[in-house]
Image (cartoon, rainbow, N blue to C red):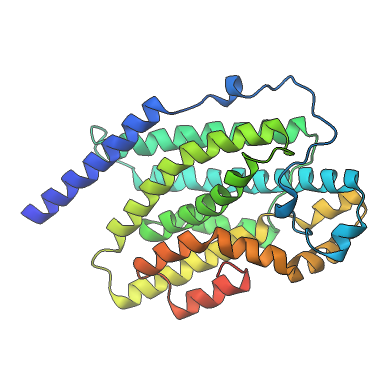
Length: 300
């Protein structure tokens, strides 16, 4: 091992140590931070109306106020269900990445801390969906099955790239939800918890991506860029299940068609992904084929 390698490992350990210290000082227990017994105000949304997939369309204008509230509650639970699905994938990938690594290293310890955080987040999301009495919404079957292969084989910058995409997109949404005065308190509080703790996870993922991409050939980098873009496509496409529209009497196909053509929705997604795209570009992971995939789901 060269002196440069040793120095690099030292920097990485210092970075992970700071994240560990942060997690010890700034972490929340959703079971005590959220008032699970309080009734749900009938006039509060599941998420900011501006984040609804139908907001800004004639179909949104046709809905009554109560239908809009119901729709946003189903939409937020669909997003949370997708979050649970990907957090389970993430935990498996981190465990594989840290398999038989030195447990004395702060990187190893923070990786396990992140897994513990993700477990709490998943339970938190699950309890919110239960409290809102919204059914479980899952990604399309093809994406679920392809994800089985991804979680069992992905490593390095591809694994952490997929992780970063899921975390960054949800982070931007939840920063709005936590400030939404007309949003349910359980959603606002859970968003605050998730935003705070995921900020450490995103920093960790970014550092891991930069570390893993070092020394990769142009061909390897292009291959990784395409895989990360494909994973991103699946995540963003799966955020809101078309079945949510049935809750307000809209045929899923009609709701999906309107949502996919919604220019307001496209703009919100592009804005949410701006920071992520900037990082991927700096890391050399924003290749033309990848950009084409991101454009298909309006991430760029």
